[in-house]
Image (cartoon, rainbow, N blue to C red; front, top):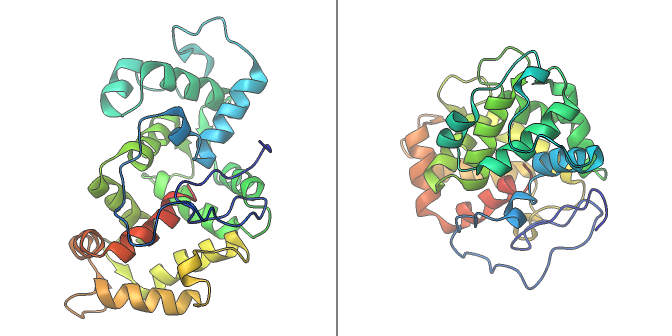
Length: 256
């Protein structure tokens, strides 16, 4: 495989090298399936591929049995605690941590790192704005950096969480100013950033629509009481009841 090839499940998106979506993939309107707990599903994720590639370049590590907590200034919580808080196995956490430590010796990821990762995986578009929004969703305490614990907790939800957990995380991404509501402008900003990153490749079903038309359809469905904002309850309820929205949410899942 090419170093930055974007593996996509269900044929919703092309890979980063501009290949067309797989016509034999998931049919439009089918229900959103919870990902299998496999290395294959892990490797769909850009952030995981970035980490695993770093681990591979680093070579085998003699201390596989334990996290090397003493090597970083910002030490992650104990392995057992992270294992209890996430859907990752002990070996997966060790592998993720070795790669994380190799790429980020300080134990912190900054926004520029996210921008670099996504520009590598999506070279045909401009990933800067999307990487900014995604970074802010991971950076829960808004201090400009992400610790390993926050990084792996977010990945666990995105890759292996329940549908509701993933939708809550997605709501947090769309709620740019973190006031507990999504406005049409916020939804438009996120959707535009995804279109910009994908270049000329987007969901087949919305290829002829502008981001604005796509957002208008979604927002009208979600804003049930017509007050101009979408609450988390409106967001989750609408997404779970509307198969077209759930299918489109996989666009979001495939660009993490």
